[in-house]
Image 1 (tube, rainbow over the protein chains, first blue to last red):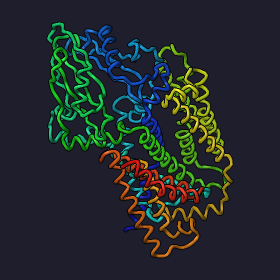
Image 2 (tube, rainbow over the protein chains, first blue to last red; image 1 turned 45 degrees about the vertical axis):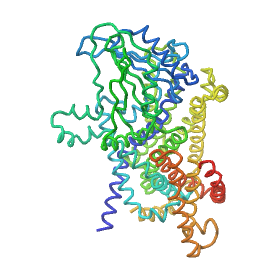
Image 3 (tube, each protein chain N blue to C red; image 1 turned 90 degrees about the vertical axis):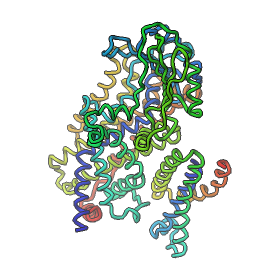
Image 4 (spheres, one colour; image 1 turned 120 degrees about the vertical axis):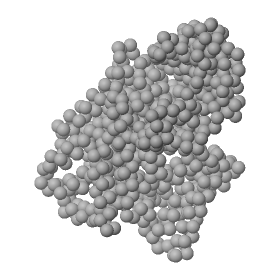
Length: 524
Length: 108
């Protein structure tokens, strides 16, 4: 019974991992990149310059600009620059008839001159963030697919743990240069050692979409009134309606300071001004998610915009909200400083590596049987093509996305859409290439091409902007410099991988066969 | 975070040395039962106690997150170093232990 159970779990691990592995690889890699969303955006919009942070000056600049450009808007949103995102972002919503939603207009301002920065159009890091849970599919299908993938990931993690017999005995074991053995060791090592992260990230992704995945408890407690649930989870700021009489908005800085005092020095995420030109204007100062691990959606202080009187201070989170908020906060990592952010990034890469090694092992095991004849059955060839395209192809697509950002003319129509299309065109071409080339050559060529693209990114940046490594390192613009250096490092890693792939010793069918047998016994 | 990192790395190294296989690989001898027990206790203690400096430095919530991150990545570092640079892996643990009083001094 025991052995049968473990075998069944191994079967589930193998097949669930294979079917969703390609998709999960992409979700993990783009999600990992999303930890540096703001930094990537900064690199992709080099026109937005970083200035020393001064919230008072930024706030005054934003208010001056909005007062001139949108005095009669329905709502203003002001996001102040921070150490990760140097742009002062303002957005406003046009006032239209009640019951309709006005258009949103967003601009990035220079916090010193309060002039609009004419930055190139680009989705930046937001593209990776959105892709990792929406998969570029229409709402809600992408979310459903990625949530199903997350559930399969959870199943794969647990079945993997059950399948892996010697967790503690092999805890520190990694034996390189031993073919299949090394791949399995590596798969186990990154799986077991970074397990807390894998479990956290997978489970929390399900918690984030809980209202979609498990609506039954909501229906049970709230009945048909699902709106009531969302109003409690995301406390809607019940803002006063406009009276229709013109009013004068007070300076925002004192309200900003008062809110920070209220939070014991906590930071401000953004300010929302409702009906700025009306006598009944209100200002909501929303707390930054970077302050605490547990995310609180509704932490804010509201003021009357014309008298400055405090209208409402949001209360403490309830326990379930705090638990949900903790999972949300842990998944997003908004609270992470530079060091912890890098650790998050490395954990994400470890997750990606675990999925990648798993895919390679699946194919490697089955390929051995056909090593003698050299002819691969269709299904193995299909897996091989998908392996190459889902891993190397994705790397190439990411690099092409960055290249497109620098090479497309700044004033090109629908520029940001073309960046995204370049990403998918490159990915599609890599599938085509993998179909046309035999296995090993396909790997080597795509890895080398991705390596070349990444290594050349610092050079490309130097040629197309005035913010090359010499400038960014000297001026202490770590987001810009870090991006270039990370691309260089990724390129060197891919070069090494391509070299390893090229010079891998030819498999010896007999010895490999014996090893495969023992491997199979151990895996089961 | 530094002190927690040093303690976690040294702790995992001690746990690693308490196994026959790795003790043999690294120190070319079989550990005596007493030594095995000592190493295992020391490793466990170091890992457990490293939560202290992590939470003292950055508060309970943030500290525990940082501790988890450091715990996972110190083990990953050790496992990657073992086959390629076994001596360096041991030296790092030794240097880490020596440097931890300095890190503790900076913290408290």
